Image (cartoon, rainbow, N blue to C red; front, side):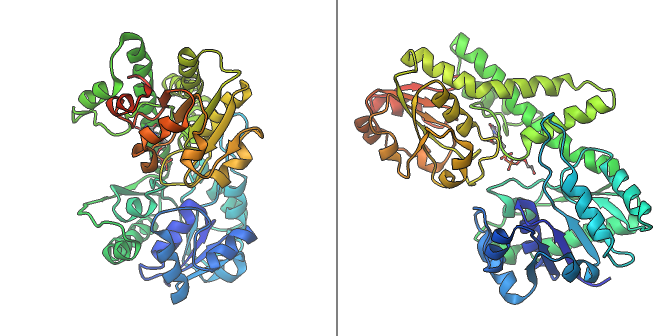
Length: 447
Ligand code: UDX
């Protein structure tokens, strides 16, 4: 076994994994087929915004331990481990599109050295590993194959990978499972040095190393995400009820979540979840269920509830400012959450588009995601680079992402710039009292 690794796909997961392993004693090739993205990585930067990642990439590229390339031939034959981190977009029917997963496996298989381990990090439906092993066998190859699901969150990718709760590796080849778990032990040994370089705060953490069967590992990933999505949808359904009965969902969830068996995390009600994972993993799990004759009704309900949330927010606005057609509204927040420029399945973008479709003059602003949102926004949504400019002359503001810039919004100044007085806080981050003392009418979700 040499210490050379190839990572197929340099997106959020792949690039973070590659950069970190390059600091843990490995020589890592990161394969990125997109020329524009590849050129950015070669300069020692990521092509997306992720706190702390750039210095880690820069030092790894400068040291020669991280090599960005688009060539399988240059990297795969020399590697003892190949991580697959390629994208799995969703099909129109909600199932995962595995074209890249299979084409990457096939391309790598023809070049891998005997005994090299193939590690699946892309989120794939349960039983996909079995199909890839069959593919390898049909090519006359017998590589050890393991599933190593990824749990990092965008915005805290480095922290999550360095200070993990658990590393899961599943497969039938015990030696391969141990080797991959050991790779993470090497990363753990280097973590304080990397954390200092990335300016990520070190915390004591006794992460678990968990070895499972292949199918269990695949199911662990989607089940974990689906459960978190379920928690959010549960909070949102209680928020709808709280709106009717004059209760405050934040107070409710603070107390509900104080029960250690439940926990407070992922019970923040608001405009619903978005991003590249939850929506896809929930629909992927529903599809896996259906393919196996299991109706995951609870997940279908969570999905339907989540899809209703942007419309619910706009409906709340309408109930407060009347017919929308002649109104002007600012949407603050286009990223699917704070700390990222990612707008995939973003509720903020959905809200802006619903408004604009209803004839509202819609101005949108995000501290990081304006550029990325352009493609997904309706053409008549106007982007603004500045909060105070965005809110000028508007009848209402909707806050759709929990950026610190919005939590600490100068509400008095906003009120001065606005025509109307409505502040719809779709992420429940503003104190009602401070909005009211600035002369604004505060509306939250479930408050
Ligand atoms: C998620 C999982 O958390 C991570 O473990 C997995 O590897 C990838 O998917 P991510 O999509 O980056 O990570 O973001 P996350 O922080 O989980 O938030 C997902 C969405 O849920 C965001 O739109 C966020 O705003 C929303 N959310 C989160 C809520 O609406 N309420 C909450 O209480 C928490």
